[in-house]
Each structure stands twice: as structure tokens, then as C-alpha cells.
Length: 208
Image (tube, rainbow, N blue to C red; front, side, top):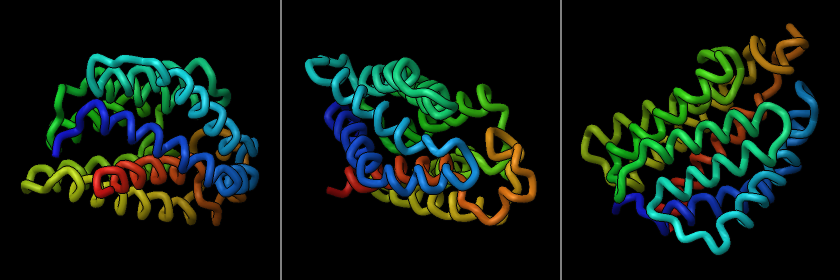
């Protein structure tokens, strides 16, 4: 199985559905250590993405993700719009057609690089990066050992879930949560949680 245009569209639509379903949870997490708008911002952004994709005739999977990123940047407020927008645009730009597991791993890594360049976050800062970094590492490792796309995506999703959960005991060093200091400890980071959600949908659509 390769990551082609229909799969790219299915992934984005699955993300939109998952964000719609988990909007309340994401907002609850963000209300504890942020502005309380992470869930609503992402829901609005991906609803706009679905509208943008309707009628689009993309040249390949990269074009789907590039359009996704551009739409998120223009429609989502807060930090998540630019961060996820830049990530999807970078993934799209790096994605060949069609993409096997190794090529998709490198495209996902380009997305991580874009997030780190914009947000200046490192692993351990209690951000998106804490879920995204282990996800890319797991995807790369699986791809390098000959895993199929569903297997690599499942490994990445599990790693992202673990990374998101591991933010609970961390003190935030970036973003709105960093203003809370010690009070940010004991809460799961909403950005890391939505990142894990995005990787889980990739695993789900490759196995459906």
C-alpha cells in the first residue's frame, strides 16, 4: 500500500471527523493550561479544510496536504493554526507520488522540522513536539525494517499516544502554558493530544 491521493484525502477527512468528536476533550485540556480554544479552533479549521477540498482536483497527495496546510493557516487562530498549517504544507511539499512508508516517514519528518522551526520547541517542553517526535521516530524505524504502511502508521500512532501522555508530569516551557510555571504540571498538553489524534487517524484509515 502506498500513500496516494485518495488516501491523503481520506486522512484529512478522518482528522476532521476525529477533531469534531474530540473537540470537547481538547477544549477541556486547553482550559486547564491554555486559552481554552484549542478544540474549537481545530474544529473550525478542519471544517474549512473540508470545504476547500470539495471540488479540488489535486495533482497528487502532496497537493491535498498543501491545501490543508494553507487553509489551516488562514482559518485557525491561536498557535495551532500556523503550527499545523506549516506542518501540513511541509509534508505536502516533501511528498512524492505515490509514497511508500519510507518516503512518507521523511515527509512527516519535514512537517516536524517545520513545527520546530516556527515554535522553537524541543522534546520535553510540553508541546506538539512531544508527541510528534516519537511518532516520526517510530514511523522511520518501522519503515526501515520493511514494515507496511499500516504497520508503520500504527507504530507511529502508539508512540504519539505515549508521547502525549508523557507530557502530564512536565512543566511547560513554551506557549501559553509556560506562563503557569509549576501549575502546568499534572495536565496533558492539548497540542500533543491533538497530534496523537492526527497520527491515530492515519493508522485507522490505512487499516480500514
